[in-house]
Image (cartoon, rainbow, N blue to C red):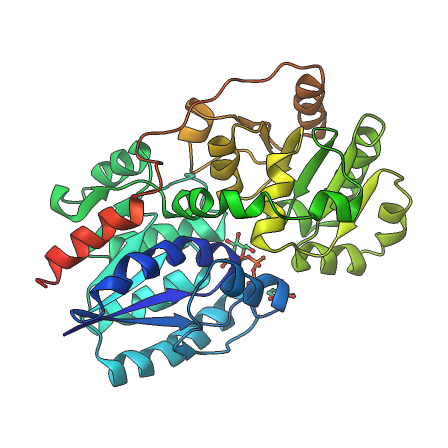
Length: 367
Ligand code: UD1
C-alpha cells in the first residue's frame, strides 16, 4: 500500500485537486490518498463552500495556518507540514498551482527525499515581481513529476533543462472540474438573486497585489468602473484582500456611489461559474479565470501586463489588456461593440486530465 498526500491551501487549489480525488478513489486498496488543507484560506466563502460544492472529501489533516506575510505564512506551513511528513511517511506529495502552500509543502517534501508531483507545472509569466512566479520556479525545480496543462509549459521546462521523462502534458484538472459541474451550475439562481440579465453585465475579479495594494491602483480601478458602468452593469464578487485594501484607503463610499456597480461577497463555485457563463465579458487579473473563460467561450479581458497561460490568448478568448486603464477600457468597449475574438479549446482540455495523471502515478508508484 502506497501513501500519497495531496495539498490544498487556497481557493484556486480546490478545483484542481477534486478530480484527482475522484480518479484515485477506486484505487483505495493500492493508494491511501490523504488530503491535507494548510488553512492558507479559511473563510467559509474562500474554502468550505468549495469542499461542499466540488464533492471534495473533508481534509484528513488541517494545519490552520491562516494569513500572514509571505515569509510568515510560508514558514508556518513548512514547520507544520514537515511534522506531517515525518509522521505520515508518504511515498509522494502532490501539490497544485502556484500559491504559498504549494511552495512550502514542496520544499519540505523534497528535503525529506519524498518525491513531489506538481500539477500545473511549467507555467511562466517571466515576471519575478509576482510572488506566484517565484513559487512556480522553485516548486518545479525540486519536483520529480511535472504535470503540464499547455504546450508552453513543456517548452519552458525544456528551456530550463528539465529531463523529458519528468514532464507530462496531461491537460487541465481545473477544466475537468468545470466540465463535471457545468450542468449543475445551470441550476444556480445567482442571476435571479442579484437581478442580473443574461449577457447584459460583466463580471469582475481583481485581487493581485500589483493591482489592488496601492491607493493609486485602486483609484484607477474605480475610475474605470465609473466609465464602464455607463455602458453595462458591473458585477464584482470581491476578494477579501481587495475589500481590505478598499477599506484601508477609505474608498468604499466612492465605490458604493457607482450606480451600476454591484459589489458582493466572494461566490461559491457553482454560482460563479453560472455568472461567468452568462456574462457579456469577464474582466480579471486571476490566472484560472483566463482558462475557464476560454473553455466557456466567454470574452476575457485580463488586466495584467503578462500571462503565464499564453494558450488562452493564442487559442482562447483571452485578451491581455495590460494595466493602463485607457487600454483596459478600450478592450471592454471593443467587446461591447460586438467585436468578439473567436476562441477554441486548447488540446487535452477535455475533462480527462486527472485520469491521465492517475495513470502516471500508478505507474510511478509501481502499483
Ligand atoms: C492567494 C495566492 C494567489 C491566488 C489567490 C486566490 C499566494 C502567494 N497567493 O492570494 O496566487 O491567486 O490566493 O484567492 O499564495 N483573507 C481572508 N480570508 C481568507 C483568506 C485570505 O480574509 O480566507 C485575506 C487576509 O486579509 C489575507 C489576504 O486576504 O491577509 C490575502 O490572503 P493570502 O492567502 O495571503 O493571499 P491571496 O491574496 O488570497
